[in-house]
Amino acid sequence: MTLCWWRRGLVGLVLVLAVPWVAAAEQGRFEDEGYWGRSETVLTLGVLSAAGIFSLFDEDVRREVQRRDRGTLDSLANGLDVLGHPATGLGLSAALWGAGIWRENPDLAETGQMAFEAVLVGQAATAALKYGVGRKRPDSREDAWSFKPFSFAGDHDSLPSGHTANAFALAGVLSRRGAEPWVPWAAYGMASLVGAARIQSDDHWLSDVVIGALVGELAARTVVRFHERNPDFFFGVGPVGIEGVGFRLAWSW
Image 1 (cartoon, one colour):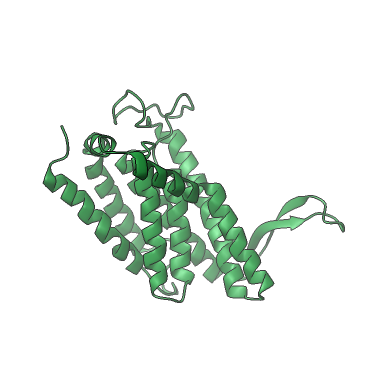
Image 2 (tube, rainbow, N blue to C red):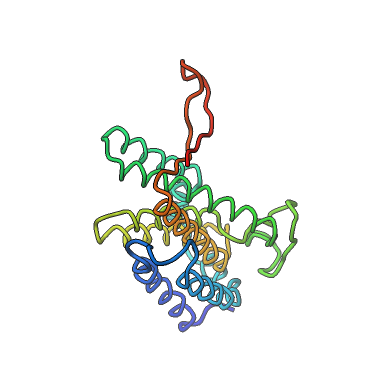
């Protein structure tokens, strides 16, 4: 059974509305709330509810996507997969930090540091959930309801999407640190495309991508709030010894 017109329209409408809704969420500083506020609770409950509804159509969405001509779209999805890879996210974050140091721009350097930490936090949370949930990836012969919790066997690491979490972690930091009004639209728009690419490449179910976006967004919010409450905190990589041979993880409080 393929998706009927109203189901396709529903998925498209949600994806269109998601970008401005998430981008508009909590712009500005966070003086009045702790690391987890009412907005995070509402966001989490809302996204989890949406993911639960979408999971009912995971197999329908996959069939609809996979039955279409895949040549050009597959090429685009492969490029977006690279953009969403954690190594790419960490590299871009390090580049922002380095550019800030080189240009003597502390705000840019701090943005890069926040982005780096948000990607790490998001990937740590994603890895824990993947292991705990153990959902089978869609590119297998099993259906969307195949789970093997706490197992590294096979491809039971579908939920949530790590690439999507990485993309939304970056988007969340950049949207809160960028001064221009177009930054959230561009950042979340690109993150949404990364999530769509994971479905197109048949690596994830739709609900995997939705949960991955939530994980990345929460990681970004937590990191940004932490830094605004602890401005002297630093976590990064530094040289070892006078000659700078080797590296160490360093932090200051």
